[in-house]
Picture 1 (cartoon, rainbow, N blue to C red):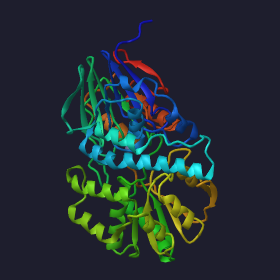
Picture 2: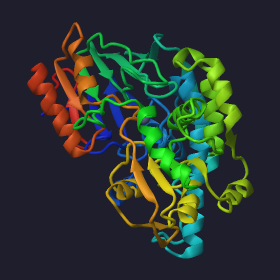
Picture 3: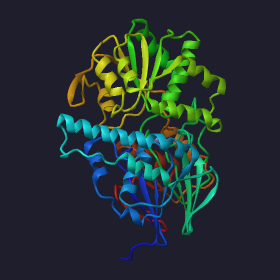
Length: 460
Ligand SMILES: [Zn+2]
């Protein structure tokens, strides 16, 4: 059997929400769409350590849909292993990567040195996946593009970034190659998001590659403030500490805004809010700068700064653990896989007066997912930390469209794709999404397997 000349290969983001990587090969050129880290389950994380399936120096360009690490976090490893081409993305994504990737290297280095000190690593000596030097090299290869600009990425392959409304800079990608059009949803934002403008409508393509993070769920019909107020009020009134693990980008800004509005309207007590993430502080400045991508009025942005204390140094961060409630601490990482929030969980997690508020999607295998499932201890820094604080899970805050929103978005297209691939969802979610597309739209659809290659001219 002849090997097809124009192919798409699923190198990540199948059977999981993490590790998004899609390789397009055509006319002797190789373009990688997204280059994410595998996160969550150990078996998945170990994939980050495997050699890349093709030599990275044979890839001509990388296109990034957005800055979240499950889409961008493997870039420094690819660069370390020889990739020297351009990394093309929107300005917002490039700016966010300039803070997220160094932070990722820092966390990986910290994890390795912590493991070395405590002797709980299997790698001897523990080595970080990549270092800050790899990140610096990677950042020097970034090139920015405007939304809606048609880019000649390599001969025979054109790409256009379209707004996705998920986080700052987030894009869908429309690609024309070898007479075939491909459309990647990237991570899709919501139709009615308190922060971001809705995703661009789908104008049609031969092949659609859709995310399915919430493929088996629909978001409840409740506003974030309507859910936050009754969650926070009793804890703050009893003098408790509310720890909110949150992504530094997008989620933290949304939380700051909602909490400020609730305090402003007198719906929750006015207590100190600490945003303990230098990265969140930088990301907030970037959102402030890119007014055109979201819906927050400038005046509100500035008022938020008046009430939220941005915690800078490690000393200030440690000092927070000595303070008493009532107070609110927002800190990364959102799925409790690392970052300063771990120290707060150790300091405040044991006291039933306090609360831990889960504010976003929790990938299977993360501490966040365990906590959401009712775990009463969490393993942090090599020891079991009892969790007696109230655990509250917010349902209304999501940067992802749910299954209904995605199917509706598909329904509005003037041209149904010949083939649709469901990716970026855990197995149940991807399968449910596949079923919905097949039953409601009657489209050809399938959830590809990890490592699978498809022929772009005869997609099946
Ligand atoms: Zn994302």
